[in-house]
Image (cartoon, rainbow, N blue to C red):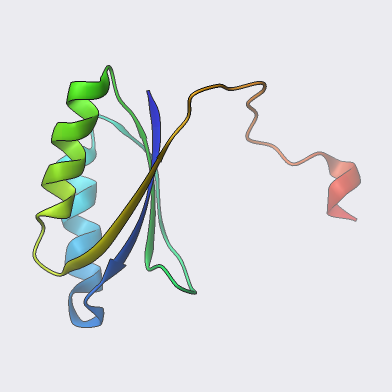
Length: 90
């Protein structure tokens, strides 16, 4: 299961939360980014099943200083690639 999480943190704990999420999810973590805007962290997780997803997200939600955690689970994927086509770069 591919799951994305957008997190709002207590600004004073942002770095601590980043480190805790990195440690907590390292077996499932595909990407973890500090971002600007409405959210502070962007997390991409690859999990084996729905129960593991619920467990991991609950652990993330319970980290001190996490004030909002929004999640999105991919239900259908057409294509996946990590490189941006050169035609879109210029």
